[in-house]
Image (cartoon, rainbow, N blue to C red; front, side, top):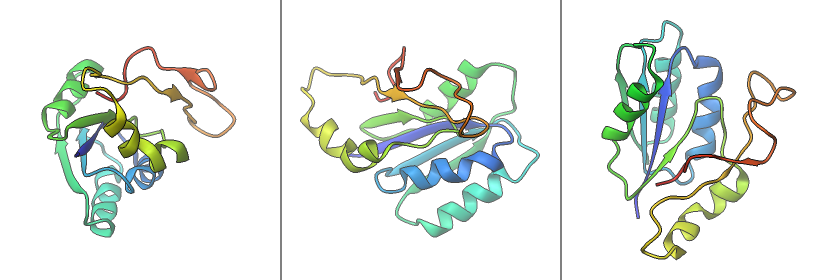
Length: 143
């Protein structure tokens, strides 16, 4: 089973490193569509890719057009995994996901097409939550 992660970025150099570190144990493919960052986002991604050669990293530029859906859909187009995990650059996966995602996905019935997860965004620091602490995602994160 191949797991792809799909992310969009725009000036995320400050946040993207921890996100990448949190997926390296299970992501077979890492897709990042950047909206033309002017910070060091690409350099952080390239350094991470050099460190973890086991993941197939695809980093592309899609000029930001003030349309999250356009960017997000562009990232999905490049994914080739059996499953896609949508990740925001300011997120990290939980230890439960890191340790158990492959087992969990392999045990799902073949009729299951998507999975919702609990979300906990830490943006811009550990004291501010962008979503309800431990709240269930409205939309599937893994599909």
